[in-house]
Image (cartoon, rainbow, N blue to C red; front, top):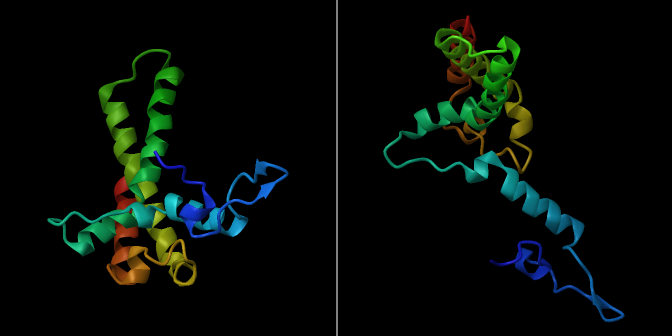
Length: 150
């Protein structure tokens, strides 16, 4: 596997040597650019050919990866807190309600920050900025998910 931190791979110059030792790591700006590309959900997000762009955009507004992290910590905590196996109904309702509440909050956050997202390199491909989803659709989705969470 190729080393992702080599400066020449990131478009920079080859590492300089100092007294026979190679300088480690890329220049700071190249590193930041690489981290932004790797960490950007929008860069990793790929629409499936059979899924309409609008639907894909609405799902992206909810930030499913963040919701997954929330649920990964919530469900085990329920087992620990109950000191036994919680009822399936309780776990299911918590997972569904938590998914809707977090998805609605994430969608509202993207709605609220859409002007800032347009000027940042890392966020400029988000669904509201790119036009895949209209601001009114994002707001309706946000409110609908929050109401459904209860």
